Amino acid sequence: MAPPEVGSVTPSGVWASLLNDEAFDADAAFPVRWPFDPRGRNAVLCDAVRGGRVLHLGFADHAPLIAEKRQHGVWLHDQVQRAAAACVGVDINAEAVALATALGVTNLHCLDIFDPAFERLVAAFEPTHVLLPDVMEHLHHPVAFLQRVAYVAPQATLVVSVPNGLSLRNVWQSLQGAERINTDHLCWYSPFTVLKVLARAGYAGVQATCTQIAPASTFKGRLFARLVQWRSVWADNLVVLAQARQPHGQGQ
Image (cartoon, rainbow, N blue to C red):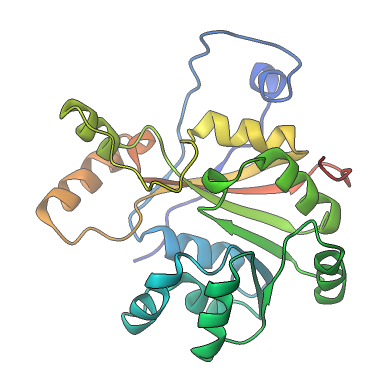
């Protein structure tokens, strides 16, 4: 299945002012006209980094799921390695890094991105892309994290994905009086707020896509996917490509 045309999200006019803290609106109606890609998050991310030198941050996913996902061919890092010209994985979870290494995955590093060794690794690897898939919602200080990435890899295209707080699944759960959540998450993102956090860190969004986590395989999933094709703001996941506006100081 061919991917749809990717939507531009380069801010202009009043939205540039709002995203860059030059103006304020307490009740802004942000229009979301991002295209929907039914192939799923992994396919969208792999297309975004294809042929590049990819620094994959938070590659490990949840440690107990790595072996099972590899067995079923759905572990994102394996797919990224196949799509990229070169790939290095970095994660702070020592147990997950050790487990993936024991399973035969190469070019992995257990590092905090604020460690000087991380800066040396990036300088030696010279990434063209920094991949940050479904990581931002786990971070205590996302702006400082992204500022650090912009500082050490200012020329690289940043590729981020986040769960969408406005997803149709969340609407469905709320109608039943519940929130279905990964309990390691600290927040939900939306199309505007992911662009806002990127802007605060010195990045400008340049392209965006809405997608589901995976292609629909159930009746409910197929129904949701059809509805999301009509209203992409209801998608499960948001993927944004961004560029650093200029070399940025390290976050504190």
